[in-house]
Image (cartoon, rainbow, N blue to C red; front, side, top):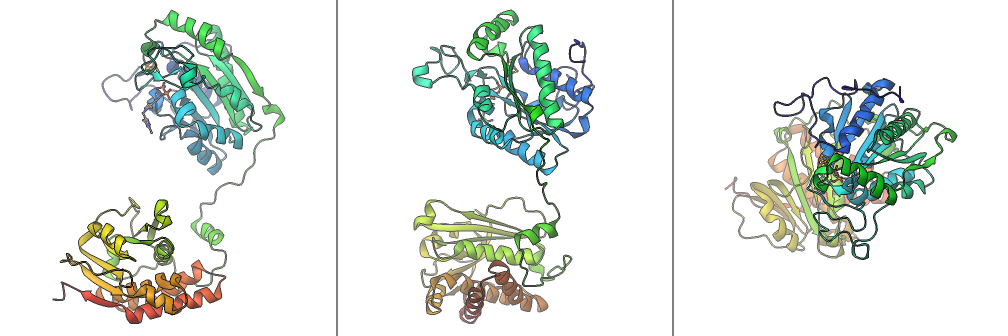
Length: 495
Ligand SMILES: Cc1ncc(C[n+]2csc(CCOP(=O)(O)OP(=O)(O)O)c2C)c(N)n1
Ligand code: SF4
């Protein structure tokens, strides 16, 4: 099959390209003479011949081939620029039956995604990578790529690439072949019929390796971008065969697939109960059944919470505790901590979202329903994010109630001072959770949910610190001290 030239549409393509917008449904969007069309055909033929349509996933790159899913009659997924190796890793590890083809340009693979490809190659992921090296960024108009030849003129190197200034073209095949894990690396050219026939064999070899789970294969395809290089077909082929192939010699750089046993790696775990067991092996509290729903009306809509303070005040743990409490009561939860310079004395913050529905965004930067501020600068910084009818809870040991609040409900307590009295500032977060309990019981919780708040707090504390009995005891104490000391200092609804 591989040594026969086939004319016409390959069975690995859709009969017509219905996903393509506009009236033209029978030909591809690539420019005439572009290497992408040729490589697509070689891959489509292999998929069809090997009968693997129903388990092949092609990862389309950012670049001219981003629309490859218009054409291939198999699964397709588009990913952010250069990230195909990471997504491919997930796809292939989650289900070893998947045949994952990572299709990437030189801007995609050798520039923004270079570290990704090297790490995936070095881990020996079971991927067949097709690397289209056309020496320019095609889609964006022909800028210089990592593989642009020395002296080659592009949009961003109008005087020609200077190796003194821009360095030498990256030799991807040579670099990947130098790693221990990859099993097959070959460089081919999509130029003359003879070269394309060699490319076809290379494509099949890489896909076969994937089917047999031999590990990481890379086929680098020197390819034409005649439009950006302003060349006709013949000139383009001469460029590929005489100039590109001279700098990037064609041939097999590595082929040790036969000596490698099929990869066996532990597959992912998808059962929520099993995941939970692995994450929290010691389950002290019994929790509630999976079908449990808090009846109070407040839980009918999404709760978006912002917590902010200084590094070291336990802000992130406070958010984590709240998220854990939500998780233990069958909410979807997200906890998004913000690390970085804030941790060195400025504002440390995190966002927590609790919802019965899937959570769209874990970022809480506006329309916040509850703001918990542990110091004055956090209070001032995040107050503008609080909803008009939102609730502010602040630590009055470190802050003053802002005057401009009109619509919002305000609760306060000297959390840091109380924590210090308990022996450690780090208990301030549990003290504040006690205040959250007071606020929730005052304003929102009905009947059984009122008592359940304390119960779920204790369960969460045990969940988070399951082996540290003293820490659990101290935090539970801090919680109830917070409960006793929190007070509402503004409630416009009650006035
Ligand atoms: C994160 C990000 N950065 C930049 C871009 C803009 N961009 C789109 S395509 C492209 C380069 C594509 O070049 P290449 O990978 O060589 O593919 P080709 O178009 O030549 O096939 C760039 C930089 C983007 N879409 N996303
Ligand atoms: S711009 Fe270049 S890479 Fe993109 S489709 Fe046209 S010829 Fe192909």
